[in-house]
Length: 122
Image (spheres, helix red, strand yellow):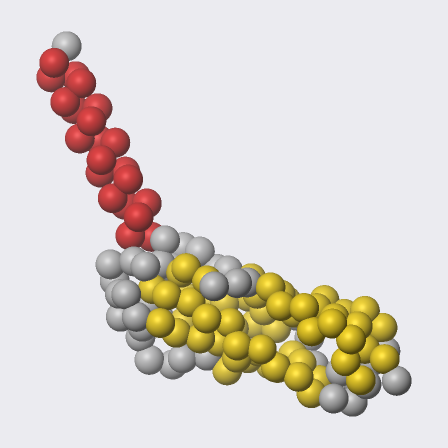
């Protein structure tokens, strides 16, 4: 019985360790609301994160939901414990409510989605 308990404890600690190293992004926020912005104005927001994993974080791309949204992201690896950021820019061409998504692709199992929203007026 004692060996079984020790074995279960060791297995659970290994799983916790694996889960911890795979969670590399810790975002200050994954959403930004621009509120009301005038048509034709380009706006941007910087999403900040920390690499909380034990391995370098490599962002391989950021895919926007449309051509009116672009992202600038770090091309070099982010070391464990270091900060990084993604600057998302939106060109307010169409009137009305908008919700735009940016999918962050990386060397992790998680691909976080960043969201921009707001309302465009004349």
